[in-house]
Amino acid sequence: MRDSGQDGIAAYYGEVLQGRHELQTGACCAPEDLSARRKKLLDLIVPEIRSRFYGCGSPLPPAIKGCRVLDLGCGSGRDVYLASALVGAQGSVIGVDMSEGQLAVAQRHRRFQAWRFGYDESNVSFRLGRMEDLAALGIADGSQDVVISNCVINLSPQKERVLAEIARVLKPGGELLFSDVFADRRVSASWSANPVLRNECLAGALYYQDFRRMMAQAGWPDFRVVSRRRAMIDNAGIEAQIGAVVFESLTVRAFKLTQLEDRCENYGQRAVYLGTLDEHPDRFALDADHVFAAGEEVPVCGNTAAMLSETRFGRYFDIVGDRSHHYGLFDCQPSPQAAVARACC
Picture 1 (tube, one colour):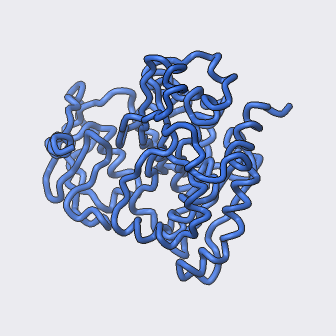
Picture 2: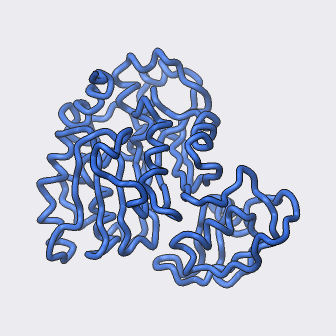
């Protein structure tokens, strides 16, 4: 049985909207923080793709050269093509979306974008379908290094299934990095009947505590908030309907690791960032609270040590100590570097 709400969302982004300027709220078009290099790559992407992009963050992690990347709800393919440039000719990117109109935009520029990036052939592919059932799209268990998504998971009526599917398709040590709209409380179920509230990422916005529980149930005991900013509605009529609910755009990072615990435990471990990540010579932010200055030895909990050593980031860190001795709960306070970064905001 087809989901009329999902069909409406697909039609909204694929047929009704002709560009970001036609959005009725500012919830799913937040400003981005792109490095100078990524801004240059963005300039290489054709204007039609960029104009049909609807996102609320920048969920493109570093160090993905040669990786296999999956973009859920890829729309016109803006992030797919940015990832295409970052993974290089030896990497690959799959974009999944349920909107035929949006995928048509993404698909018709494949050969041109490959030429723009200097590739002999395109390293991207697009698949029409639902992110709740990636197996139906031929995406196998443990086949992806990185899964990204930009302001789309909130649109799914089966978020738990999406999170479980992501865990299934990621390789051990693989990363989930996504941006989405969150609410400071559970929003009214009646909002789903309002096309604007539903289609523009408000009716399905994730209440953070419910999201935390969903992640745990789907096999993600620890995740990290990389960045957050207030989502501006910019529509007096919609603001009157949503009342006191506050919306934020969050970028969230999680890793598929077997040793993660549901609390920060202290094993006496310390991490040293080597300063060798491209575009991050001085410091690297794992998340908003864990910012590592190059060469500085920093105490870390067991989960953070695993995230830095048992993933592709392992080559950029030295981890001192192991899990042979346990010292109770870790006092997980923001690192001094994170405090400095926040003070400058």
